[in-house]
Length: 613
Image (cartoon, rainbow, N blue to C red; front, side, top):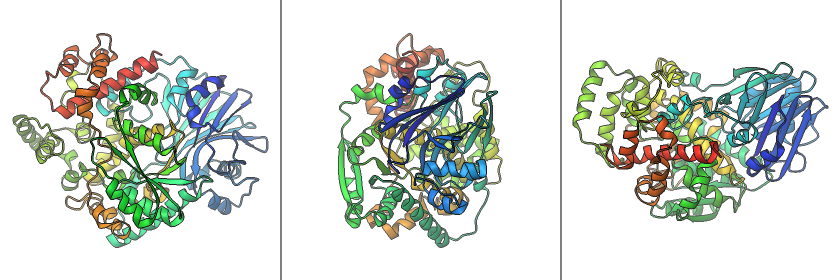
């Protein structure tokens, strides 16, 4: 929706904010200055276009800058019996804060980051939504605080220094875990958290106000029919709110899958002329025919968008640099192009983000529904390790042999390494080639992981819990926020509503994975909404030809960045290993090699084009 920036004991450069974040708020830009507090807002006008101008001040005391959308704000005005001069959700937040302080945050349903300054108390309250849909990064060194919606904006304000130990985590996980970033003294405000800042003494208190973890331990007794009815009701309410909370037209991404199909089907009930969009890529599986079946069934205003990667070489550095940090997820590339095309038609778009993590959509969940690999005995690990070492390496990630190989690999691992192998699987089995001090650079992640693994929950719930906290937060939501907002497009995710976040984790495991069927509950619900041809389609997502890119189209770029003698990677990875990767002299599955090289290339592009720029 917008971009925000602020500071305590530091004067912002509004010019640099506009240069780095204009795409987040092209409709209006305004600042606010009081004592040692500086606030700035860039607006993408969607709700109460005339009355929602920010920064917004109430009673010459409370001033807010806000990025996001509160979908139940009209309900909260009635609940707390507050009235205002606009119908903006921004004003609703101020009215609630004035009346009950910070407690109202538990009632909010939406995606948000906001900062409220109290000029009388000289305090700043900064809060982020449950899942972490809307981003916020902040620099703090005991003398000043500077925050912004994007890392590139912070970099434009301050001479930031590298935090090299965080890059080891990036190499293993593909992201910066939790609140870590590439920079010294810079943190990401974690999902479901808030900051309380004393602006006089520049003291900060960080507090977690919501976590999904307890909801995985709250096993509910609903049978399948009851669970389907509840999820259906939650989704209808969620979609209706997200369609209604906009003065602009709301569209919907429509793939050939069940997540976007269900969202589109429900959205069509609340928008008689819903615009839907399907994309296909050169040389890839074409979902357009399946999506067209849904569009025809609900009479949507449907557009099929054909996307080519022919100009990828020209756009690669720009796309990766948008993230402000090394970002390994190669599906950021198609996400960028999809958002660019969708923006030509709408400013607000519905998507299916979160459905896989909450309802069991990944194929890797299937074995964890049968066996808790996190609790394997030493005997099982030893035998599995011997068998894995005897098997030839797989080179096709989709065939049954690769599946069997991965099972033996998982069973041979210990603790956190099981999770990393089951998920991103970048440097697993080759981590000894990472040069570090010997300290456990995964200690923070391992601590959080152990809390989940030692909980009295199933192996399936453990991996889904970790995926929500790490994969969804640090990768998928970041990917879509940057890709969307690079084109001033707002993405809304009905599956991440408060009600589903607090209900889905406690559902029976068999409602998520049933034998080999993923997302069983949603597939069953889909019978009500979707053509039969869609019901048993496998999850595809944006399956880009990464191996082909690395070995052909982008080979020269990869070699130039990663193979350079002065590459940043050589400070953290053994020279002979990098050279072996470049020259394809290491015994390693081809898909894994491509993923490693892409991870390193993304880091090199960030280092040269962002950090050294």
